[in-house]
Structure formats: C-alpha cells, structure tokens
Amino acid sequence: MSDSVHNPVWTSCKDAAGIAGNIFAFGLFVSPIPTYRRIIRNRSTEQFSGLPYIYALMNCLICMWYGMPLVSADNLLVVTVNSFGTVFQLAYIILFIIYAERKIKVSMLASLLVVLGLFTIIVVGSLQIHDQMIRWISVGSLTVVSLISMFASPLFIINLVIRTKSVEFMPFYLSLSTFLMSTSFLLYGVLNFDAFIYVPNGIGTILGIIQLMLYFHYKKKSIQESKEPLLVSHA
Image (cartoon, rainbow, N blue to C red):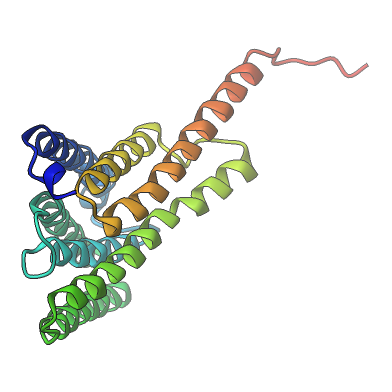
C-alpha cells in the first residue's frame, strides 16, 4: 500500500481524479446563478427556499475541515473544492438574506449562525482529541454522514420524476455534473485509500447513474408522446 501511494504514476492518477472532481464541482457551484439573477432582478426570493444552501454550506465546511492536515493526510484537493463551495454557498445565503422577506430573513440568519456555531464546535471539539487516528475517524464519520445526506437529497427528485413521468425538475447538466463529480472523488478516494471519501461518493455515483437513466428514459418517452397526433378522434 505505501509503495503505491509513493508511486509517481499512482499519485498523478489520484491528483488528476481530484482536479477533475474540483472542475465538475465548480459546475455544481455555479448552477444556482440563473436563480439568483431572477431573485436580484425581481428583488424578491419569491417561493425559493434558502435551506439547500444552508445544508450545502454545512457540508462544505465539514468536508473542508476533514481535508485539513490537522485531520487527514494528503487531501489538499478536498480542501480546495470545499473552500470554493463554502465561498459560493456563503454568497448565495447572503444574497438570499438581502432579498428575502423579513420573517424569512431572520430565519435564514438564525440558520446561518447555527451552522457556523456547529462548525466551530466540531473544530474545537476535534482538536481536543489528541490521538490523530481517533480524530481522523471522528471527523471522517461526520463527513460520511454529511455527504450521504447531501447525495440522498436527489432521492426526492427521483421520486418526483417517476411520479410525474417528467424530467422538468431534473436538469440534465446538473445531474451529469453530480455524477461526474461523484465518480471523480470516488476514484480519488480509492487511489488515496480513504474510505471516508470513496464510500459516500460511491453512493453519489450510483444515484447519479440512476438520475441519468431516468432522464433518458422519460425524455425519450416524452419525445415519443409528442410525435402523436394532436387531434384524436373519439368515435
């Protein structure tokens, strides 16, 4: 195992997978921009929910902390992707707070403070664990729970697609980016012998495949149905 880790080709493959994961994740991070253009243009958050950005921020913070040298070894690319994610989510949350109604504004601000408070507790608490292995396992376990929670959220979309037989609420490029990012970090985790990375991203990859299969199935079905005559005789 140690020989593989120090093998230049092995290291290059691992870094390539991590860099690819960073690139695909960037596609996910910028995906809410059209929504925020609409919010800024209308100066209202309308019926949009800010909670997904709160959850995403918590996930990015926990994963970023896990990638730090104080917790795990040789996970710089985990730190970079989640640092970018943290910046994007904070920006989205701040904009949401600015344009939300007063009641929602207060609720979002309170949620943000709770997330920052919980993250502070996690950091300070984990630093009190002097055994490096136990600290790694503790923070790693939190990372797995956080990532699986994030990857489980598409289950609601999958259920909606099956129920409505429509891919309207499941954008193709968002599903593709999620699949590619998960697959990249699955490979990165495997090549880095890090189960706390490859297990949740393996689950994310499987869910990504399911989303893409559903997309092509119902997209093809809707195209076939659209070819039927608009006027049907009811004799």
